Image (tube, rainbow, N blue to C red; front, side, top):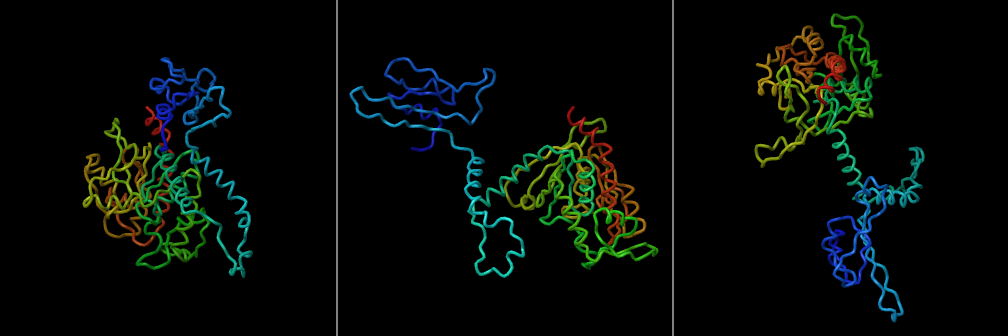
Length: 400
């Protein structure tokens, strides 16, 4: 018989059936008469405390087939229907069943595996377990972070530094990072001209010591520069710090398509972001309408870099919504001027939107600094400081 609701089972129950209880109180109107009489039996619902209904999703329908006349010599079996067991229950039972067989794979070290490859075997698994493990966690994260305290747009060196500082200082805040690329880190995986070394100017060495990245001190030169032996060492280290924080979630391959706004005394307040998968956003021109998703948050920190396909998105949107008149436009390369200006200028541009890193150069008309990364790290530190100054006020406004 196809799966039916309790009410549908009641409609098809034989006339000799006694309906004990069902989850749909309206089904009472359509239930067959159990004994051929003209009156329908009342439902007998599970007992509660008298104040609250029985928990949803826990009711079932029990159909008791009545015994034949007294002359019969046997009693028919009881037919029982209950709502399907929740998937989480099935998973927990499955994990219990699998725990014994997987015990042989537990607590292995790499040394235990060495030299034993002939009889090597992975623990058994069904493909559906992999699918459920990924989708269950991802959609739980989407649900959990639909209301966030802070959204950081862009997971380059500035955005990651910002997330690290806020996440460590305020573990009570829920922080979502939106990164358009599959690989976070922005341009910080390499130095200039695809070279491997990353150069930072002092005093940004303080941040490297903060996250425990080793470096070579070149001494007191004019620019006081020193070199990390590979840019990936910095980027992978800050990334691992950030994604390990329990109050931070990174959504990569996801881009911000628009800003959520609310009326404010200063015009509008930024109150969240409109998101979509990056591959979807890239095909709005050649596919039918593909509507986005949203994340509400009282503070947005935009660190999307200078102008480009995804760069400077939030500040360009401020211009198109007439919240700021125009962009200053990034000026030519001047390391000495640029890095100081970016760190000092990191601030809340409009209520609810802080801008840092090279995106700020498009607003203020600042110079670019080229292949030196100290300003990116310290702009992130400054952005975190600015966010912590205003977060409680913006949260209060968000609740009003």
